[in-house]
Length: 79
Image (cartoon, rainbow, N blue to C red; front, top):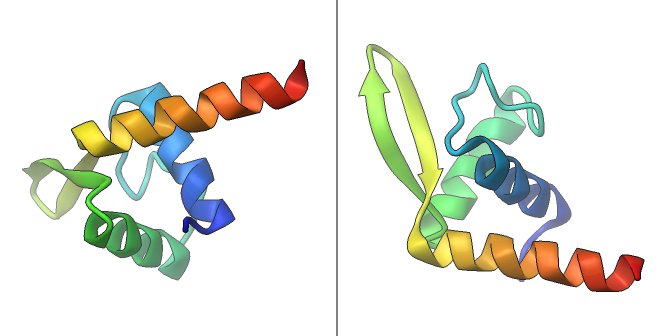
């Protein structure tokens, strides 16, 4: 089961390709770190690259599939 804020973060990463703490619009402060930990433990995101102290997060194959399913469900509900 995914928490609602994690679903929003998955959709954001899917749309942007990758995110950092500064580019994430879904979560701020401690919530950002909690969500990245939570999604990483679920196997949905992974580190894309590191630039100094900044980690870039991207979706794994499993994460991309989950994002596509979420988008598909939201589209079906809107119809």
